[in-house]
Amino acid sequence: MKTFTKSFTQQEPIPESAIEAAVKVMRSGRLHRYNSAAGERSETDLLEIEFADYMDVPYALACSSGGYALHVALCAAGVQAGDKVLCNAFTLAPVPGAIHNSGAVVVLVDVDENYCIDLDDLHAKALQSGAEYLMLSHMRGHIADMDRVMAICEEFGIVLIEDCAHTMGAFWDGKRSGTFGLVACFSTQTYKHLNSGEGGFLISSDAQLMARAIMYSGSYMLYTNHCAAPDPQVFADISLQTPNYSGRMDNLRAAILRPQLAQLDSQCKRWNDRYALMEVILHQCEAIRLTQRPVKEQYVASTLQFSLPQFSTQSIVEVVEQCAARGVVLKWFGAAMPDGYTSRYDSWCYIQDMPSLPVTEQRLSKLLDMRIPLTFTEKDCQLIAQIICEVVGELTISD
Ligand SMILES: *Cc1c(COP(=O)(O)O)cnc(C)c1O
Image 1 (cartoon, rainbow, N blue to C red):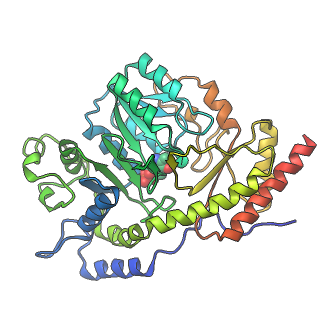
Image 2: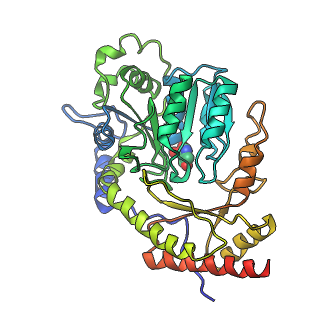
Image 3: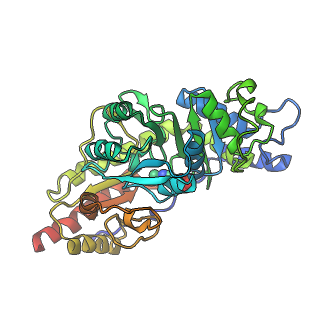
């Protein structure tokens, strides 16, 4: 029986050029982003310029984490305590956490059969709740029909905030994910598309919003150091009105991110090549349902999701166990109790008036998920897909 032995949490090493850049920063002693020598642009400033350029937006802010960026995005967009914010029920815990951190009320929206936000439910919840904000998670890199998302936002006057933790490098209909809303956030935490341990970005084309975000991030009165930022006069009315929520990025992390950003597009291609190979094999297994990906969606498949629509909960648990016994680590989003990074919406018990979302529970109960770290070769990915097919196939027969 074939087994797989590599770790699903092992990322690639940091590129040598990035290690050298980090060592240079450490030798300089100037790790704080505003601690620059005369005439020097700090690594953090340069990273922001390069990320804004990559995203083709005027403004970018690097900060301490993706979840922090989401919190600051909400505050900078004007969210006040008690405001309602629509949010995917299928997402990672830092997303509702950021909404809670801003004092706002989370309004959960169902997941659809392709793991995107359910647009009919979004429309219904927008109407019912009167929420003025949508924090849209492109969860696991699945991009909802952005044409319809934007139409719904327009219909209800909803401000869109994008959580692009899984869509850095992705597009919808030729437009970069993260350029649809008023503001978008990214993560550079180890398991995302760039790895600085912890870290995040916030981007926007709105000068006022960005000035507020920079002040919130803890710029003190040093905001003129920022290069991917609005003109200093934009800060005039904002700087004294905006509290300092201290959450800056430092030059060490910026130094290791810059060479990675330069390689991002080729890394995205490597993920998609692996995904495509797995898809071909998994498609041969009748019990497995893969998402139909719309032609307008140019995704980055750094993870893979599939469902087993005909399987009982018991059989799905067996799939997870038997795959694990053969070295293939699958995450199940249907479990009632949170496990590791994986938690279902109803475990976020701090949410006011927690709704019951039977459609989401039904869909998540069939959903399995795995990471595709780039330390896996294409052959590794084929082996993993074969193991999944064998396990699922055997259980189909015995069911
Ligand atoms: C990782 C993640 C975040 C938060 O990023 P951190 O940098 O870990 O705070 C937000 N949303 C999603 C969907 C994520 O996966």
